[in-house]
Length: 97
Image (cartoon, one colour):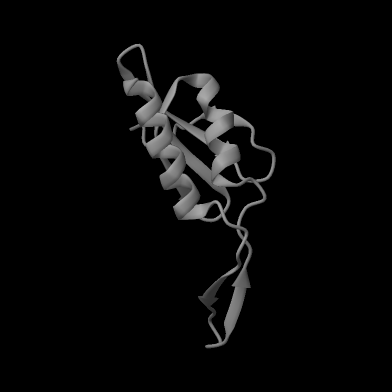
């Protein structure tokens, strides 16, 4: 029951934070607005891809190119990255010293 609640909460948050296919406006160096396209892989698709690694507990869009995913497996939090174009799931090594 608790796992279903966590997955449902993460899925809802993912849909609210980045699951839509709307374009975002960003400033450019010349003062004009440029259009930045969201990744092809939606938050829901990233959540589904990463769930094969364990229970997804966090999902963030990184630089409009990939999804950073926190997964709980065997009592430990693991960090994964989901490619925004292919949905390929790889370990996230960016935070290691």
